[in-house]
Image 1 (cartoon, rainbow, N blue to C red):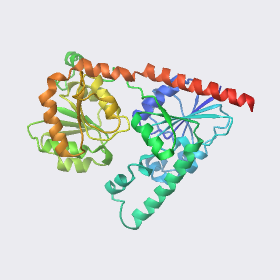
Image 2: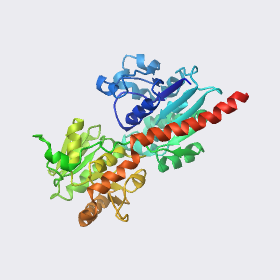
Image 3: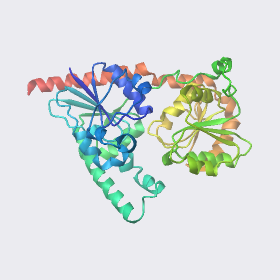
Image 4: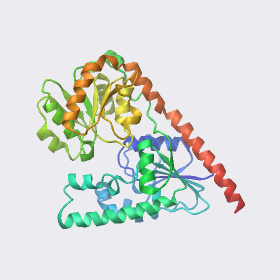
Length: 391
């Protein structure tokens, strides 16, 4: 059986690429496809050195820096990839990968991180927070997104079976595409971050103290992550310290509202990030995530999480109503709610034990992911092959 794996694009390493690496590991002989492939050598090594077969976007002179500006061309670009020689196509999709063209003698399974956010649920939020919700430019962008959403809905019909990353996304697939899906949680290694006790024993001149006083958040600084709300909450609590790890277009605005008790470190090496996670009093998160790997990485270090009670957090964090809580969940995406959640955490901190946090992450072990993915695909292939033999 010849297998093709189709990913949206490869230019940075985030949660979707971690999952892609496990899919590639499960199907070691598969051919990888993507709109563009600009991975660094270090990141490519995580894919076993694989290079993707790419679309015409790869060859454009400004593609490395500006391919995202070519969003209207993404449907045409993904449809230009030729996977016709393969028996099984697995798309790893948060945008357009699911729209790769297949034929009736191929089985197409989509591992779906989300229907395209900017075309569906978060469309107005993206437009508003990027200043493209008004005037002629706003009209043009809305028209483009209308066309993109129509294509995305039609392209979803090319998928034989959907796998969703969470119950939250399964509901979104049902709402956007009118399709059912099976939930297989993404892989998160229980040792993704080093527990605080180990950090304390590891000599490192720049490391924070084990389970120190600082709260930490790790995030891209983009509008929907709402790091601005976390920073605003800590401005109202000047006696508490916040460390922000990550970078992005929102950084200047966040720096402008930050008080002296907030440190923005920008991007840091993985080892330094892990030390901060392991030494944090708690990890603070304000985004409505489809799944949310960063809060699980914090729990892997034995660190409690304070997170918005929406999206994937409801499936990955055990709140104070649980017998073995791993964090505090708050209802409203506001600075006021974060302040209240911080007070609730401090009042209940003794109840949230590091071993419970680490144990919670074991539910998302990479071996479990590979086993469930292979089992699902094998069962669907057996059904499909039986029908194909009768044609």
